[in-house]
Amino acid sequence: MYCVKKISNDITWVGANDRRLAMFEGVYSVPYGVAYNSYLLTDEKTVLFDTVDKAVRERFLENIEFVLGGRKLDYIVVQHVEPDHSAALLDLVHIYPEVKIVCNEKILTLLEQFFDFDIRTRAHIIIEGDTLKTGAHELSFIMAPMVHWPEVMVTYDSMEKVLFSADAFGSFGALNGAIFADEVDFERDYLDEARRYYANIVGKYGTQVSALLDKASGLDIEMICPLHGFVWRKDLNGIISKYMLWSRYEPEEYGVLIVYASVYGHTENAAEILASKLRDRGIKTAMFDVSVTPKSEIVSAAFKWSHIALASTTYNAGIFIEMEAFINDITAHNIQNRTVAIIENGSWAPTSGELIREKMEACKNVNILDAGISIRSSLKEDQLTDIERMADMINESLKNTTLPAAQGAPGGTTEVIDPGTVFKLTYGLFVLTAKDGDKDNGCIINTVTQITQNPLRISIACIKANYTCDIILKTGEFNVSILSESVPFSTFQRFGFQSGRDTDKFAGMALNARTNNGIRYIPEHVNGVISGKVIANYDYGTHMIYIADITQAITLSGEKSVTYQYYFDHIKPKPQPPKEDKKGYVCKICGYVYEGEPLPDDFICPICKHGAADFEKL
Ligand code: FEO
Image 1 (cartoon, rainbow, N blue to C red):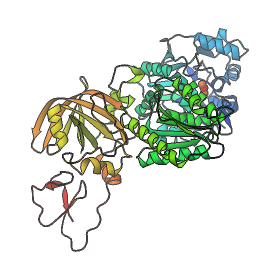
Image 2: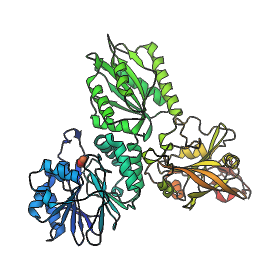
Image 3: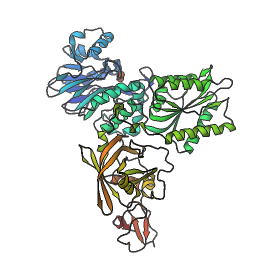
């Protein structure tokens, strides 16, 4: 029985899922299965985009027959020859003998290597930029070599603004009834599998992925249809911004991935102590035993985290087998832009540390911390200071990190404004930061608005009593960090409930993230950051309005921006019921209680600086 999903007026998903496959490509475990996507466009002509793996061929053929409803199949666009997308080609040619195969020359060559039927006389060969009119729709073809094989191309349907993206934007994991990423909690439940797919399947080809992103940035895309995983129709910037980071080998998270190889638990013990010391310093950690966790998961984690600590015993006078395989894997996948710390162990001739260093030094822009720790069999009391020192060096390195995302835009160009970042502005909550000499400061604001597109310009409103407002008046520069829904209340306490005139609002923050203007921004629980250069200001009594040109805009995540309503409903703690005899007013913004009656009209909340209008009676 067919099982299809209509995804637009004229396009239907006709793919299928496989939850029995143990190892994708014979290498990657797929505990949540895998989806083989194929799409059928029914216009005046009928066009199929790719086929599926042989494991799901039967269901796929039923799906096509149903959607065609007795019509013939006019075209099959082959975008990628890998057999998980081309295995059913011969079946289709038998069933629909008049079908034309739309492909490029390289695809034709590979098809002729995989198949033994006459493909050339059925082929409709296209090159970059060619178009194919199918009735109301017009398809154009864009070459995407090495995303993931050399023949790959993607297709753009200008009528429905759909990009058929081949392996790009794909993910491991079967589709469990939902076809669109916005039908599920993608960030929570599926992002790890999408990253694991990216890192392991196309991670090596970051330059080529960047080239495709650059080409795609010129298209008006409303839907992305990959060959595996979900279809994207909302918040495309979220997944695109992940691809920008991954393809540039820039970390998503600032913290330490600890990977260890331990035979009798002593190297593991050193790794555990390091993790504990890092946490003592407020640094995030993730930890894997390389002999236990599948390599594809750890490779994926290496694409996620900024720092990597490798702890390995010496084995056969070399690196422990599983650790060596892991390092070979990440170097083969072109890992770059990471800071690495190394712990070696060896009972009589430790060599693993130096060998790991040699392998990691061969990677581009990898900084190896000069804090190597060498253990003889087991860590001793007097080596605890070495671990403390390593934790300190990692901490220092994190503090001095200017996030690479702040240094440029897709493809490593000098372009620094991601136009998608301004779409994240809502009537929400933001951290406004500025810098006065060596003094960093920030406060919470709720009004940031785009006012013109060309030039890209915003306005912000800031309470004049805030120190940050004074700094901006003096320096003319600021950053706006757009808070996302995961932001904890402590961020509001840090930036909203104390004054920067007498406190360091960044005290204890592990990351020293700055944009190109040298001003700090908030790298966590934030989906984008915008840098502004003031061109005008207006004094409106309690508030100052600044008009500013955007000088930099970075999308940091696909998470939703926090709205004012969301803050009140989900983040701000509910005021505790007052004691029976207590009289006074509570600030609706921060919860400060003014005891007494009446509340003076000109009262200003000492915590968040809002006026009497924002208080309500207890
Ligand atoms: Fe699922 Fe490169 O193919």
